[in-house]
Image (tube, rainbow, N blue to C red):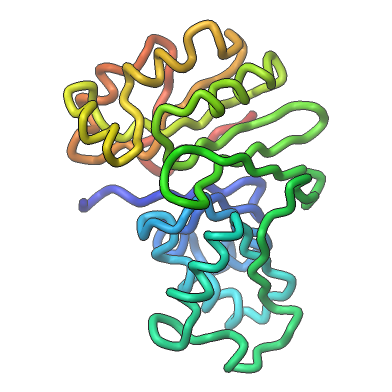
Length: 237
């Protein structure tokens, strides 16, 4: 929908969560700094600009780029995107080994630029994960796409007051609860239910992945104190 972008969140200039729109909204200088790309799952609105990001990084002679995801996500990217049909197979191009790797995220996560990144399963398509980014004992959680998943809200609770921010998807208004359930997405009512008595009062809760056609309805129904992303916002945590 014109005027809206699909999911991409840039952290500290070099860590990208999902690749839905980064190539369209970031200049080449900003893209050149990206070194780690976290994919929550393989739906097109989360990966559609991944090839263009990779193309820009290669043209800029960047090195040490890693695309991370669950095992099913990485296999899907190799099989269905970087396969020589949809986009070139990097192995066939004999690109320098130190340019790009696609890696399943280990259970213990990994460290990059002083940040620890960990992935946890959520209820969407096979291989879907949320990400917890940690620094100095403080955390930010990105839900990715998910249905009502008690494991996600248990994770929120376990992080307690140390959870600085929760970016949680809220795709549909309450009136579309049926389609939200079938497609495994959340509504404002489900978010309120999941967070009730779970999230710390000090945690900033930010709704994202709101379907543009339903933005006004969803925003009007968000629980009190919940912020939201429309696109282009900058948060300092």
